Structures are given as structure tokens and as C-alpha cells.
Length: 287
Image 1 (cartoon, helix red, strand yellow):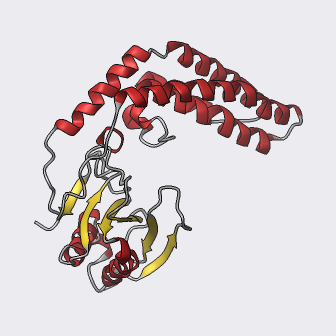
Image 2 (cartoon, rainbow, N blue to C red):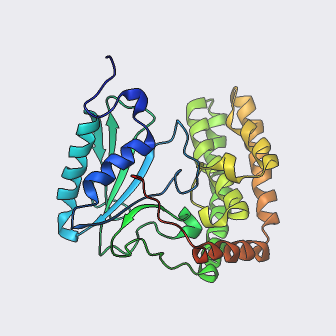
Image 3 (cartoon, rainbow, N blue to C red):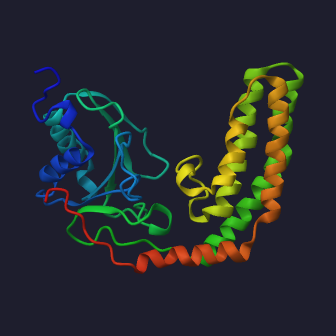
């Protein structure tokens, strides 16, 4: 039948099925310590368009072997149509590979981060990434990493002051290209130097622990009235419209900056820290 693979039919190749197949293969291996999901799974937002954000932890000297074993199980499900491994050293210090399976939905992209057991930052700060969905953990490798609300608040204050300065300095980049009648350059600068910092400032105000998440999760985490003001700023008809939208974005930026209430933000950070004190059940994907 068209669409069948060695493992499962394309219509049956689900997020849960892929995770379960990987877990069955990797969990018995002694030098693999744990496997968990972040991203949509950690936020309980998995839908038919979600990719897979998988984290695997193992012995420091077994990373390449773990990658080979992972690719073996993926090939059992479907031929790997394409893959990309981030050049190393990566920004976060871990090996990271993206896989697209030929017989899976194109949306079911598999993003795997393979971590050394000795690594310090494993994306296990629940205030930022939410509690992970744990597939297995043999030696407490998914223990939460430190989060200090006071230090985080200090970092946010510095960041807010910096982007205010940068925003003010670099608006001319868009304006000069408008004056030159260069719409492509003007829109590119507008996205980079106006909208990007506007969204980050809104994040500091409404979702401070995820201030650097860019446009991810906006529709889940921003107030509806803020989204209604932001959305039109992303749709540009022409240079005249861009000029008006940039002015509106600038107005909203400084309005937001003036509205930052560091007492409220401090309380949000302290409230977020309570999540690590809540019990999180280990999720078995093979049960």
C-alpha cells in the first residue's frame, strides 16, 4: 500500500509513536542516562503541526555512538530524507541534529539535542522551559538547574535598558532606506531593529522568564489586546504604510517601556519559581 514504511504507515507516524520507538531502542543502553522532551510537549501544546524537541543525555565519550543508534531507529521508521547537524561548537555547547523523515508529515521535524552527562546547562530550568516531559531518567539527570529570581530580575533590567538604547539608536536604519525608496532594505531593518526589540520588551513585561524567546508562543502567552496592536505592524503594503507602522511601533515601544513595573515583574519571577516545587510525574511513552 502506498505510504507504508518498514515501521508504520505515514498516516500512523505520530509524535507519540516516534518518541516511543526511540525510547524502546535507547532506554536499555547502559551509557544513555535519560531522554526527555521540551518545546510543545513541555507546554502541553502538541498538535498536528508540532515538531519533536527531544533531549538525550549520555556518557561524555558516547555522543557519536548515541547519534548513530538514534539514526538506526529513525531509519527503521522511515528513510531519513534530509538531516542537518549544527556546526560545532554549537551556541549551547551540545550536539544537535535535525531530521526529516521521508514518510512522515513534513511538520514532524525531529530536533534532537544530545548532551554529555557532564554538561551544566541541559534546558532544565522549568521557569523558562516548563517542566520537561520525561521519557526515562536512570540517574536523576533531569534534575532542575538553578534559577535565582533576584539575579534574573537584575539581568532583565539591564536588558531592557540596553534595548531601549539600541531601539533609539537604530531606527534611522529603516528611515534612511525609506528615504532612499528601498522597500526591501527598509522592511528588513524594520523587522530587525523595530519589531524584534518591541516584541522582546513586551516579553519582559508579560513573560519575563522567556524574554528571549522571540516570536515563539506569542498567541499562547500575550494578552489579546497586545496581539491586536502587534499584528497590524507586521503587514506592510508599501513604503508609506511602513512609515506609519514604524511610527506606531515606536509609540508602542516607549509606551511599553514606561509601563514596565519591576515590582510586578519581580512577583512574576517569584511565582514562576514555584513550579519547581510542584511534583512532576515521569511520563512513560511506551506504556
